[in-house]
Amino acid sequence: HIPSDPSLDWAGNYAQMLGVNDTEAFKEITRLYLMLHADHEGGNVSAHTTHLVGSALSDPYYAYASGVCGLAGPLHGLANQECLRWLKETHKNLAGKEPTVEILTQYAKDTLASGKVIPGFGHGVLRKTDPRYTIQKEFGAEHFPNDPLFKLASACFEAIPPVLQATGKVKNPWPNVDALSGTCMQHYGLTQEDYYTVVFAVSRSLGCMANLVWSRLMGLPIERPKSETLDSLEKLATKS
Image (cartoon, rainbow, N blue to C red; front, side):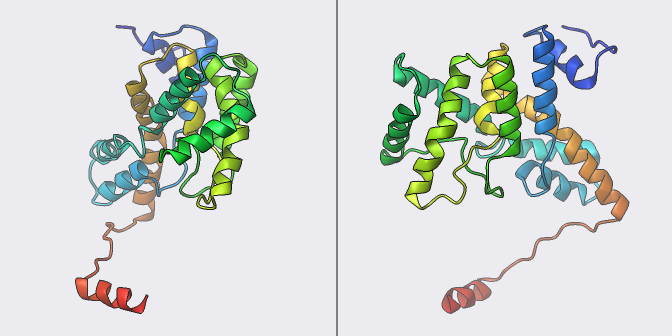
């Protein structure tokens, strides 16, 4: 057990209580991680679920607990683990080769040709490089530019988007926040990948609770999605 240190800020205190690294650099990356993952809009699974349950005037803890359940899904809160595992597998497959743009371009083409996906690229809303990714990339370039996985991720940033664009099927071929977040944390010794979702949840609690406060302040009604009958769906299908 590592006791709380009230002399530290919230994120710095959390970092030192994790017990994996006592450097100021780890506190800084934890501050950055918690800030970048706090929230980006109300449409993501965890934020929307919290809002939905909270709209029934449920206790905030109950509301956010429901949102955290959404984080358990592999398409949401587990994405950064999937990206880190993909980078590790790619690094292993390169077998010591320098991760050049040329090599990774062909690797990406072979990956897609085999029917597999490349995690960490694309976003449901954004149509350009995720600014949260850019901030993490700048941090990595300053603090650990020679980390093997960071160097690999940087080469992927140059090689993969053109390959995805060439398919004509990808609206946003640019990297998202998950493409680097796991790499940043593992560099400082937080290697338990399944715990990343917990860090994500600690972070997003701020954004979700802020949204809930505003919902109560504005007196927003209980959320009730519109239902559709089978007849209406048949009519829509006929028109199309």
